[in-house]
Amino acid sequence: MDRLELIRRNVQEIVTEEELEGLFINKEAPRAYVGYEPSGKIHMGHVLTVNKLIDLQKAGFKITVLLADVHAYLNKKGTLEEVRKIADYNRRCFIALGLDEVQTDFVYGSDFQLGAEYMLNVLKLSRIVTLNRAKRSMDEVGRAMDDPTVSQMVYPLMQAIDIAMLKVDVAVGGIDQRKIHMLARENLKNLGFETPICIHTPILLGLDGTKMASSKENYISVDDTKEEIYKKFKKAFCKIGDVEENPILALFRYHIIPRYETVVIERPEKFGGNLTYHSYAEMESEFIEEKVHPMDLKNAAAKYINEILDPVRKVLI
View 1 (cartoon, rainbow, N blue to C red):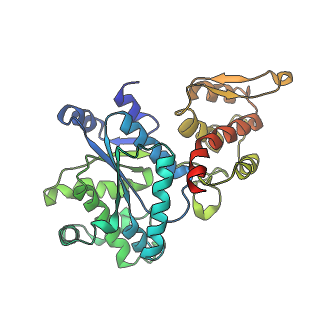
View 2 (cartoon, helix red, strand yellow):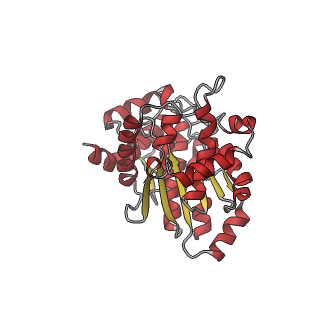
């Protein structure tokens, strides 16, 4: 797999692919970033972007992880002291999940976002972005957006200035970040900054078949115990033959198969013995043909997810 294929793997959108290809021509060591708002437990939805950062590292990118404690404060996720503690926890989790600590710059928002140059750029951006545009950009990520606070309107402007001040070439995030990233692409050039390339990952399905979210209790946390994961998977939605809204298949596609060259579904001999897969396409095809039972799929997924999360559990002990 060449580096462009690696970057494209399991992404929903690249804005734009032509710019990405040109970046490799013009820069020997490009830089990409993700901003994480510290606001609770890290779940497998967050790990989707961590996986993409690992792919980008393998493709030759220098990675910056923004631990956005000020953003979390503005978005009503706790006091600055509370969100800073959660940010420290996030950092330990991301390293345990496979980010190269030496090749990754971890930056706290409060270390640079309260400076004069940063705030002046936020104010400059506020003069050219309308209130409606700022509000629309927060539709997917803000809380209580039917009656937003002024701080929530500042939030997307800060995210755009983060991209500029961190001097990154590529902004990575879930597809729910798209409107904020497009605000940055449309407006940063007016302040004299480069226009960022944007890579968007899908939103991971929760175990009930809807969007994975901490508020729904349908998520897999990176610090869930082995027993908790097996219990959650046993109850998970996994309809025979259904691949569109199947959270178990999504875990194989986005988390398990990218980390393992070979995946084995263990089954007793009386049910046909073990099944071995080298690609997600193989597994999906056989699930559609009902050659794989949902419970066998769940048990295998639980086993592999536990293996992926073992290093995180050790760090958090």
